[in-house]
Amino acid sequence: MQAIIQMPFKALRLTVLFTSLIIAGIQAQDIRLSRIEPPFWWTGMNDPGLQLLVYGDNIGLTTPRITSQEVTVSSFTRVRNDNYLFIELSINGKAEPVTLRIDFLYKDSVLFSRPYELEQRRPGSADRRGFSSSDVIYLLMPDRFANGDPGNDSVAGMAEQRDRSNPDGRHGGDLQGVTDHLNYLADLGITALWMNPFLENNNPKYSYHGYAITDFYRTDPRLGTNEMFVSLVEACHRKGIKVIMDQILNHASIQHPFMQDPPDESWVHQHPEFTRSNFRASTIMDPYTSQYDRDRMLNGWFDHHMPDLNQKDPLLLRYLIQNSIWWIEYANLDGIRLDTQPYPDGDATAAWSSALFMEYPFFNVVGEAWMQQESMTAYFQKDTPNPDGYNSGIPTVTDFPLYYALNRSFNEKEGWDEGLARIYLLRAQDYLYGDPDKKLLFCDNHDLNRFYSGIGEDMNAYRMGLTYIMTSPGIPMIYYGTEILTTGFESQGHGFIRTDFPGGWQEDAVNCFIVAGRTESQNEAFDFLQKLLSWRKTNPAIHSGKMIHFVPEDGIYVFFRESEDATVMVIFNNNDSQKMVTTERFAECMNGCTSALDPITGERINDVGTIRVSAKSATILELQ
Image 1 (cartoon, rainbow, N blue to C red):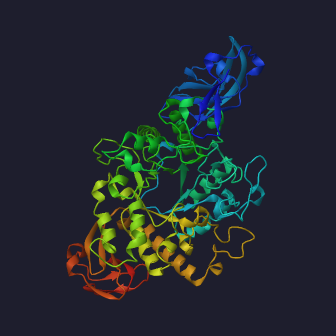
Image 2 (tube, helix red, strand yellow):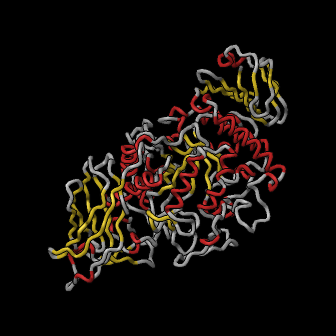
Image 3 (cartoon, one colour):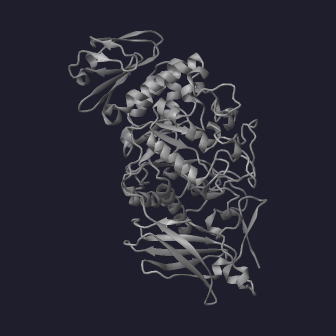
């Protein structure tokens, strides 16, 4: 007999075989083992426990056994689907690397055995340092950046093949293409790389973006292999570039085995019919919210092909936690970007972050909290004093309110809360955050209008926006193509804001990876950003210096970044005309300095009593 689980998709009915209704006549030959996850583990971890997900035909009818003094089976769990068995191991803190033998017994006899490897942990692994405000992150989509291996563009057995003519199709970019262009990133001044998910997305369409995972432990073969990703990380580290992995706790693909043959109905949020999230994360902290709206937010599906995982299930949560730790240790990661942070269960997210930082105390994680207001954004950052006492444990949070401000401020008239005042008022609310210096600052990303389009293709506004995120407190991020003025509006479709980087394909007529392939305006933008990043890389006042800013007046906004040994002054002029800025008002920050150097233009100012600033400009000055 079979029990039917109604999923939130009318055309879909998944089946689970209940353990209590074991089909009579199961024979030993009907029991098979298909996979064990994690595929291997390490000795010397701070958490001595390890949960193994074992999958295969009727594997849940077996009993696991390990004969070892240093590693024992502390418990095992059978679930409603006999095709799963969860084994809890206890690893002695002094255990040496070893290949274990796991016996699977059926009717008191060993049916078969499988090896399981415990490897040596990387030296100094627990002391790894995550990305910080001294870094500049570069976000790219592997399928759209560069095609280094045309041989893997279409792979047998994968549901979607390459179709570069389709904006929403797979275009053939891969990990090799990223590796091939690390010199380009290093030359630009990038110190950290974040790629959209590269794990297997074996879906019939929209598989290029990576957010509908079908295997949490396997690199998509159209992008490369696990070994290739490790090699990419090693190559990045040799060039001084950290690597941040995009991970997802909220959902998986409808094609994942969890969905096609789930361990238990509790692994996915169930609805009588397809129910999409209302995407209103405000319901999480809203003191007046209805339970209906909050449940719809947290338990609704992201899309028809992205079922909503139930992180309240302890076996699933443990699986997700271990998957993140596995990738950190295996690939030697420097950070994680947590997709859709508000959407998974909040307590589960806090447990996930706690487990990560127990193993890696100096690591960093940035949570994507797509909120429009500062107070709601701050709610999701670690140590924010939330009225309900919630603490996510996530150190870094995305500053979406700043994104909206940067795309409006430089192209609107000055007002009480408009123009530069819009940015000033945002920064004035940093008291809401647990640590405002750990906000992720950006002008655009893979879900938003391209910055150059959002500001009306205005080069002055472009310089002002990028100067702000590179000089104000926080961790700046650049979306691939921003440095060459790539355009596109989200309303056209996501494929148009995730266009191929020109020159990443052999057949491309234009190659923007090189100076000769870029237009004059593209080189102007690239050179400006390159100088800005090169200067920022070695400036401690910008990395961690105190910020003091002054209320914008007459279209002029000034702030200072101060460290023990340096003071940097940044002046924004949002007027359509040149202005002479008298610095008497800023005496508390001038510290008696009489001269200054513009590190971008190389111009020296011998008298800083009055400073001439160009129309619609951002000026950086090192006070001397």
